[in-house]
Length: 126
Image 1 (cartoon, rainbow, N blue to C red):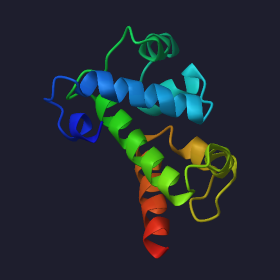
Image 2 (tube, rainbow, N blue to C red; image 1 turned 90 degrees about the vertical axis):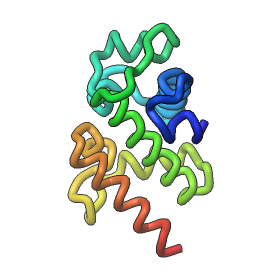
Image 3 (spheres, rainbow, N blue to C red; image 1 turned 135 degrees about the vertical axis):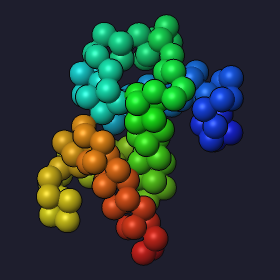
Image 4 (cartoon, rainbow, N blue to C red; image 1 turned 45 degrees about the vertical axis):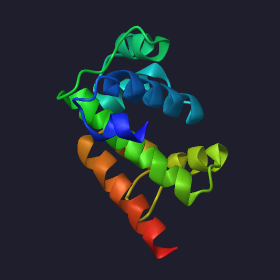
């Protein structure tokens, strides 16, 4: 998976990234509407993405945002020891450092990047 995500010109990148995003949505129990706000797609398009009938296009904002979502997932997953319940709880809990619940922040590009950077910094301390 990492190889296909590392470069947008890899032929499997859209499929692999779409599958990864769909799995993240499942693990974090994200609705199609919420996932759509995060990656910049409509809820119906997210539904097709989750079903495998829609592919993210390389060099588009949704593709790039999906890559950042995967980065956040992997960092959070590593930091919390692959505990999906702990990840959902952390995302839903207001965070004083970030100024809001991470799940609300990641609906914007700035919030997604800030949350990813924050989790990376936490991981670096341990």
